[in-house]
Length: 223
Image (tube, rainbow, N blue to C red; front, side):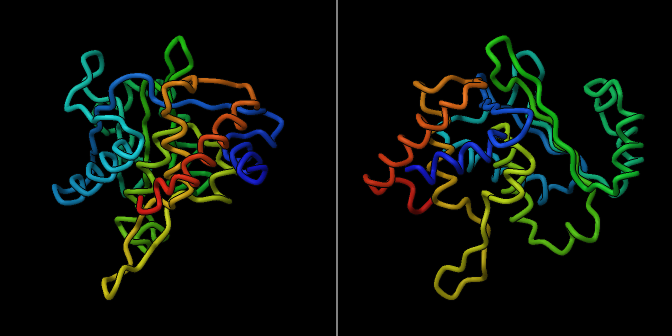
C-alpha cells in the first residue's frame, strides 16, 4: 500500500514545490469533439464514455449551463485555434497562448475550470495533430485524453505513469485500454466519500486504501 501512496502523490503533484492537488468532476459531463470527422469524433466520444463509466459517472448530451463542458479541439496547426468555434470565448488570452504553444512546439494543452468546492466544472483540451500524434494509434490518443480529463493530474507525474496501455487480446490487434491500477484509482477517486477537490496530501492514503480493498476483492482487473 505504501507504494500506492507514493504513486498517487506523484500523480497529483505531491512531490513538487506546487504541492498536492486533487480534483474530479462534481457535476454532469457533457462532451463535444471539434475538428474531427464523424468517425474520429465518435471514437473520442466513446473513450470519454468508457472512462466516465469506469468512474461510475454518466455522460450527458447537454450541460444545462454550458451546453458542453468537456471540450476537445483537434487541429493541424496552433494558428487554427484562433478560428475554432467558441474557443476565444473560453480562453480570453488565446492569442498569447497560441504564441507560447507554437514557441514550445507543443502538441497538446489542457485547462480546467473549477466550482466553489474545487471540483472540475469544465475541461478544455487542445490537440495539435503533429507527426508524433500521427504515429500513435488513434484509440490510444482518444483514451489517453479522455482519462486525463477525468482528474487533474500533475503533468510530470502522469508523464512518468501513463494511465493508458496497449494490450493484445488473443490474436486481435493491440488496442488501448486503461491500466487496471489506474482504473482502480479512477473508481477510488469518484467514491462519494472522497472530496471532489482537495489539496491535502493525506488524501493519498485514503485513495490507496480503497485501491488496496479493490485489489483484494479482484475489482477492476479487466478495465
